[in-house]
Image 1 (cartoon, rainbow, N blue to C red):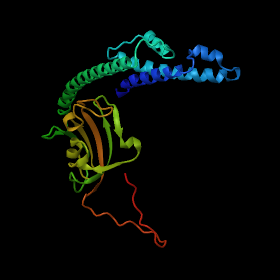
Image 2 (image 1 turned 180 degrees about the vertical axis):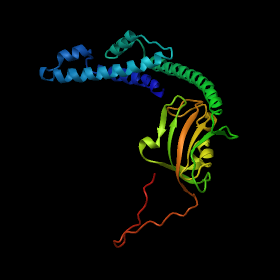
Image 3 (image 1 turned 90 degrees about the vertical axis):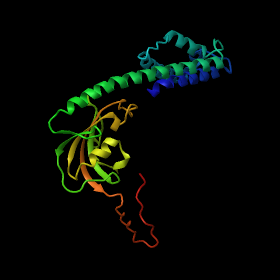
Image 4 (image 1 turned 30 degrees about the vertical axis):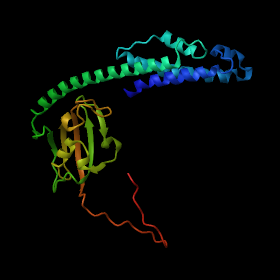
Length: 273
């Protein structure tokens, strides 16, 4: 949604840039093409048209998205403003342009916030319904915090503490089945301190032993809450299938780095992540 706000900045840049063409006998695009030298006409025509087409598609796409918020701007007026930007015929001063664009951005922001709240409320209702139904399934355990988990494969041995670094394979989905993140698809497991992830993960993975595979259903308050994150909407329930591959204690001493055989060789250092 942040991209929707870029149109005002683009409009400002376009109008300022086009107005800058007025320094020496401002001309319209058509007049500029007619005056181009024959050997350069094709290049200049293509370049000018590509710039205009790219700009038009970007603005058109952005305005189309904003129409979903209830903002419907007249394309003819937009084109009129662009054309006036090539000349001294602008009907607004620089101060008036800035004021109008600022008010426009503020209005769009208000509409986006209202839409986000509406979507979050709808997601919360859907999430509560999903959690209630999932808790009734055979094999599902609900903890005091509201975390739901299901043992797919049991492991053996010790379980991690919150301060430990764990290595896992996982796939995260929304309740509609949409995958939003997967180390399995990337083909590379993930390692991280268990106390530096969402609460649902911190609690759930501590129930597992190495080799175990669990399915977690995480309420939004144990996930990303009302704000959401990236493609995860606010108040969303998250489902993860997690396989615990390794546990490394945070207190475990690090191995001494190997030294090169060459005289005065420096110690090898791991790359910073």
